[in-house]
Image 1: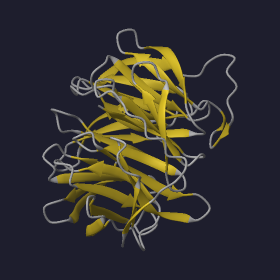
Image 2 (image 1 turned 90 degrees about the vertical axis):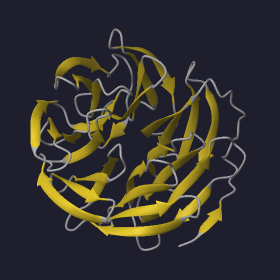
Image 3 (image 1 turned 30 degrees about the vertical axis):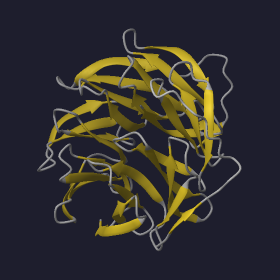
Length: 333
């Protein structure tokens, strides 16, 4: 595996005010990551990535972002490392035999990151600065899709859509310890800040399951109809946010009491959506809460836009233009 610089003309390195912050948006069909101002959604810059960027994570210090280059007709096997200060061109981490990278998470401290690779059925532990794989963790049968990390960095959790399961990974021993049924089409996964429970979206079942972090026993099953595909939390861990791709809604849950709080309609009357994997539809996918503002951002993949949702009213208050087929979103403070 090697690390190399990638100098591409699509890179626009804008000097950004530190206080403003930005939203990073992965445009799958354009092979780019856009940088949008969190103040008003204006485009601040653009990174070129590998083919079909699927997931984005930002390092704890806010200086670096990591992008999974999943590939389209042929399997991708690289990650893009983005310098958010605009001082260096993107770097490429070559994953060698490990194809179809998808789920990403930084570990506490930000030196290492985790990446699922569907083609090789592994969870990789990567030294981001050196561009080297430091551990290859076999996940067994099925394709590990998304990954979440416990707050103490000792455990990770991986979902498998094709098996409807969630697995626990011991990061001290770099091994899978448990795998349990979550629900048909288990995909999105996140760990609740301050609580530690593992939340999983089961897209075919139309449910969200809440799991005990050590045993993965199901503590609660919540309804989220319409192909729930991603789950994220507000910074304080009080609310869980679930994007429902087919229903074109955002389910909001009181995460402490584990009960529904609101449903936000994301499909706009009169808006022309293009063909997606679920037909001609809005297709919301990526979702993230702004840690500094009372807002939530949802990638509307079929509309090439971001829906900006006010957390006081739980209604969309703006729509920001993106590149082609936005999927992953991340906030860079």
